[in-house]
Length: 247
Image 1 (tube, rainbow, N blue to C red):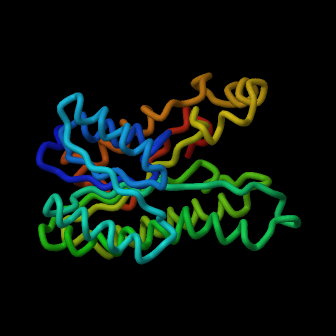
Image 2: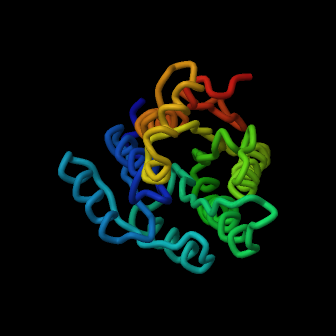
């Protein structure tokens, strides 16, 4: 699955799934623009990619700021000439039972997890249309498919991302641009580390494969969907959940 000559833009790339996606795409030969708010972590990631012979650039970005999204993606296109692959991975949680959830927590999650994806897609589309080739990959969640108590905002945002994926796939398919989603299940990241060992062990018991996933498991799926091998797949949600949700 060679991505040599391709340019990727990955949001939420400073840690976890986004970081693993950036590393995997770079390993496959893509030039990677890594975007997130934490400049120090981004610079460390760029250093690691370049140390292994890859090419990358750090973009400090708050994906909820429309003007920042516009200027950052414009700068990435100016630097590398194009964007072939967009990975919308940036995401946050603000968990609370819906009857107690603050409007600000609802808005923050929807803006970061869903609206930001729309903004990024909008900005990369012109580059992809010109070259008649593109891969848009949205990182959704198993909880956008089955719901989760205490995560009405998160589940809604991730379900919305699935609908956005299908709509974009229909809009851009005739121009050889695919749009797919990857739906991780329980993945070992900074977001899940706070849940405690007992919770993780109980969660693993509900997963047919008997283990929680790693960021690399998700990154492998993303790299496949970004490749020419996946050229006839669009509007699809690829589950990476160890069998947590089937069907």
